[in-house]
Amino acid sequence: MTDHKKLLKWYQENKRDLPWRKSKDPYPIWISEVMLQQTTVVAVIPYFEKFLKLFPTVKDLAKAPEAKVLEAWAGLGYYSRARNLHKAAKEIAAKGFPKNAAGLLELPGFGPYTSRAVASIAFDEAVGVLDGNVIRVLSRKYGKKTEWWNTKARDELQKMSDQMAEAGSPAEINQALMELGATVCTPQKVSCLLCPWSSDCVARDKNLVDKLPLKKPRKESEVWVWQPEVHIRKNKEKNQVALVQNTYAPFLKGQWIFPGQVLTSKEKPKKFDVKHFITHHDIYIQIQKDSRAPKSPKTVQWVELKNLKQVNPSSLLTKVLKKVETL
Image (cartoon, rainbow, N blue to C red; front, side, top):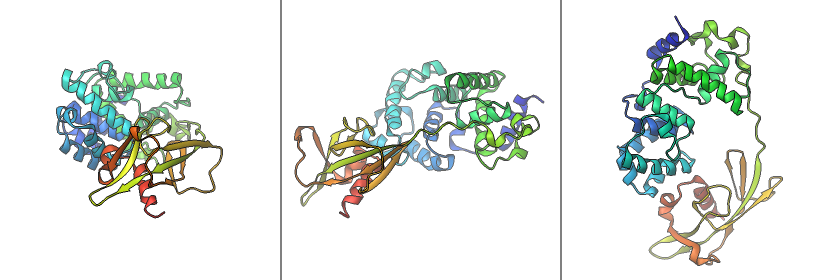
């Protein structure tokens, strides 16, 4: 039996029953792929089901206010993905779903992986996918000691994935590769005895399973000191907080956040109120609590505290406000 047939047989016998696998409709497949880029399958399922209940079709998503989309996305992080999802939905609602990876790649938020995943799974286009799971599976299966984060090595792995898809059943083969990486050929505690390729895996044969794929060099963390000005005005009917559209901070770009400033630092500050981590950035927050009006009232939006998550669902703002209550 060929590698291709072994993998397909394994997948058909072992695939998990996941809600986005119940149809070939590109819309739920696309939503699931974007959500899965930032968290695990188990964590995604409730978000996915809630999102599809709120926006059952791409037209429903296109018509929804951005604030409602962001609110539904709250907890998943990376809010630029939700904004791009919304923008792409508007284009798809107007023009229809492109049926190939090249067409999907033109839409906001569709990178090489998402385009190929949707095109192959929904439309059976013979293109391979390349995510962390597939990189790990292919690196181990073929004993590739390549720096997969570099363009040349990545292109080589992409070509290998494409060849697998071109051999037939691209929707199934791509999902099988990802499933194998997620459930058997995992980063740690690898279950080689359950793998359909265990008898001819180069990494297993040469005792390289723990060494492949190569580890990407870690980027050194940058320390940022954020000094947000938290202006809250209270009256009998409502409590409001002042926000400005972010043009000064290197995180949450373009979003509505507290006015203030961001400083870079070579080391962690000795005094701070809250800390927050985004990728390789360590943010130490020194809250400037102030009941006076902000200096530039024309650029300020006063938002009711109860509506804050509709304007900016980031946990960072909520974290700061919770701390303000104790100061």
